[in-house]
Image 1 (cartoon, protein in one colour):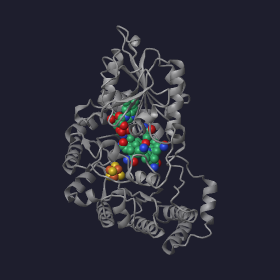
Image 2 (cartoon, helix red, strand yellow; image 1 turned 30 degrees about the vertical axis):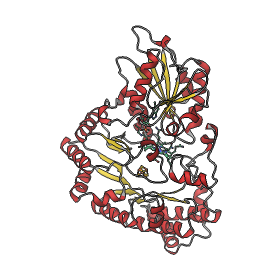
Image 3 (spheres, protein in one colour; image 1 turned 90 degrees about the vertical axis):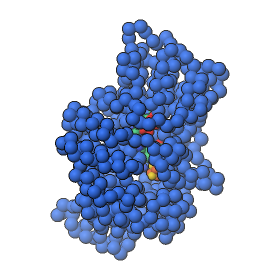
Length: 485
Ligand code: B12
Ligand code: SF4
């Protein structure tokens, strides 16, 4: 058996073959960490890695096409939803220009739909889960003109058109990998576009938990691997010396999985003399268990904001979605944050399949209580969308919910357009939208000119009175709501 992808002609003596990596359009300017991870793992002596980020280019497909000469393959990172349409556009353009050049898709969507993505003729290989080792092996085999038979972690289309899924690859400890080479991307451009000198950094992969609405348990099999803290702090210091950032945004799913790791990292940051702040994710149960001295060290080392997923204000719903936390733990963690002067994002999800009005109301009430604890606490409310690969979706599909079939449909399956799933009635949707508007206004820091309208918003929230929302309609008319995240 041979996979249809082999490209030895590109390997030229004396020149390094190129590996072209593409990050599709998105709204925020988070660094393309997935591409940094797989690109940094390729031996720079052997390959020239080119990262193209559609968010930085006016005509990204042309930039990709201009790099195809001498390329071994094109790798694309693909999230579910809108990024798929850009990924398709670029992959098709590559195939038109160089039908022989393998196109590799990796990231969250291909990890869940490895074979389905290969129904698209412009995609030759998909990678499941952690990508570093799999991608190195793919590139090496392509460079040597070898087949991808037995290359763990990837799925390929065979010459006869059949799709062949190689076995899964075990999750490797991230310490084994080379440090991410931030020189592969124009760091200063990201700072400019973000409007702040904020470095994105990933210090772990996966998650041990089992939330029924999340695809992580499916993609990483409830495993977690994290960088050794001393190495991480040293690396951050090197990056700080080079890029002089003010803030680090840790993009980990659950940064506080190992509290001793966090303690050591905080101590090393303090000793290093870096003048930075940082933000990360924390589960409410982890916050409760975190010893006071670690809270204090985190604050001292610059911790400025935590993202603590609440998901629901109802303990019954939290049990159903297997979040494995209690509302009381959310408040206990929030108290600690107030005590240590740490800001918070506490996201909620409403409209789970068959969620009752009373359960949604419990979420709105908990959001109100949290916001009133600190003007630095935000409580964004999202509508449940059936994320592929999660338990709740399996349940919903069993009850007749239909997931998209094609990549084009998945591209339109936009999680962030602000619309609810079929489980939220139009009346509930209207109530929640109004609540979100007034609640946001009621507790945030406002200029003296907006104090009156803020008082009105507080009045509405304390009485749950959201009828005739003229203030909301006027504001929305002035500033239309953002469509994508
Ligand atoms: C940064 C981020 C974003 C950024 C993306 C920036 C960008 N680069 O374009 C922004 C803010 C735009 C974003 C948006 C959203 N995101 Co987001 N995001 C993240 C986050 C926090 C970090 C991603 C990251 O850089 N990870 C670090 C890298 C190293 O890990 P990785 O991406 O998994 O990559 C590894 C493998 O997947 C693989 N790999 C990845 N790409 C490729 C490519 C190739 C060629 C190969 C071989 C391998 C490979 O190798 C990498 C190294 O091992 C993740 C959570 C997480 N920690 O991963 C969520 C996450 C990816 N997002 C998620 C969600 C739900 C969303 C939103 C719906 C959020 C929302 N409600 O607004 C939207 C949806 C996107 C859309 N439709 O527009 C989900 C998964 C969604 C999905 N099924 O695709 C995640 C997993 C969070 C979660 N647990 O729910 N997100
Ligand atoms: S929601 Fe967070 S804690 Fe739960 S499984 Fe997903 S990543 Fe882990």
